[in-house]
Length: 116
Image 1: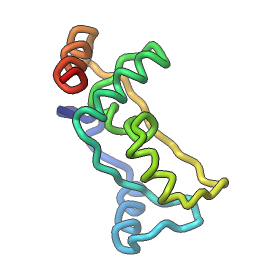
Image 2: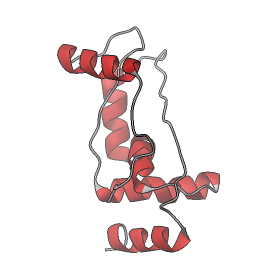
Image 3: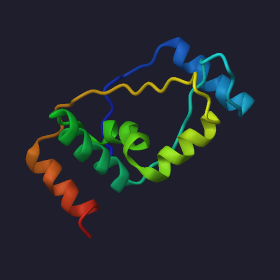
C-alpha cells in the first residue's frame, strides 16, 4: 500500500549507517545504527489512523510504515527487544504529511486493511 516516498535521495551518512548495520548485523552503543523492520499493510494503515487520532495530522502509508513500530504491539516488542532494554537508547521517527492522503483515502484504507 505504501507507494510514495518523500525523498528522491538520501544523505551519505544514511547510506554509511545502513551499510554498517548490514555488515555488522548488530547494534552498537554509539547510537549510529539503523534498525529495519517489515510491517504489514494493516500495520502501516494503523500507524496512519492512530497518528491522525493522536496528532490531528494525516500521513500516507509510507509514513505509517515508519510509525508502525510505535503503534503495533508486535513491532514494538521487536524494537524494544533489539534495544535490549537500554535506557539510553533513543528512537527517532521522521514524520511527513503528504500530498497523497485525504480523509476519504484514509477511511478507505481503514476499511480495506483494518475492518475485515
